[in-house]
Image 1 (cartoon, rainbow, N blue to C red):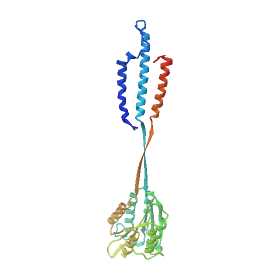
Image 2 (cartoon, helix red, strand yellow; image 1 turned 30 degrees about the vertical axis):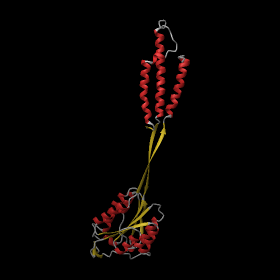
Image 3 (cartoon, rainbow, N blue to C red; image 1 turned 60 degrees about the vertical axis):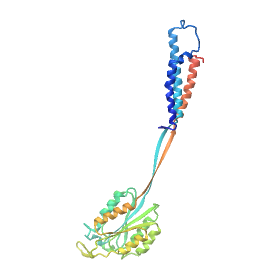
Image 4 (cartoon, one colour; image 1 turned 90 degrees about the vertical axis):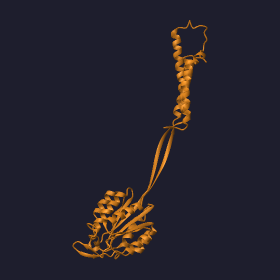
Length: 322
């Protein structure tokens, strides 16, 4: 609670001064009936008169106190914070072709990507995140959701594609992701596309798909994952050629106003996800509202009723005439 006009409270200092005046000097001028001598007035009658006078003066001072406090305009304050969060819709588009089994990232490219993706998801409180996986075809692993627990569990379940679906259809993955994000009402829609190969499958080429994504206001961050060596090893299968099409991934990010990253080991991959987390922050708008409930009416009405009661008390009960 506060007071709109607190300076009126300084008038309360007059109340004890008035009381002091009445006690020391006022009684000389307050008699309603003058007597030449008080010898014929009993002490009991004088005592009753003094009590009546004290009651009346107390009531009058109470009325003054209530009016002064009412003039100060006491108010009850209710503060309201309205928070508006413009969340970001994020789609993780992850390559699950057989080359993701390469062990140049410990314990494998895919496991390193899954672990860093889970760390990234845990940082994005309130944002909607989905997962698309792709090889020769693309599949929705998880629709957009804010449930990070579900996301983490579904990331754990990601495995490389079956041999019949092997390949790298980057364009189709972008098209599938665009289809998931195009109807989103979020101000910011992004894809984080990670691949360790070059587009060699699918009916839509990456250039066309990225242009469609741009038309829907979708920004794409691309990550090329794999060492700079010419070959990497897949346990039980031998060596594979590291043929990452970094040029295409750069073009995708450039067209959609995103950014291209190169990850040559797990630590670099962690740093990339951390940088993307810094680049894409949800906008939080906090508005403070203060509501005032006027309380002076709860003082004025009692002071009015007390004044009427005082008048009745003086005229009809105590029978005091001014």
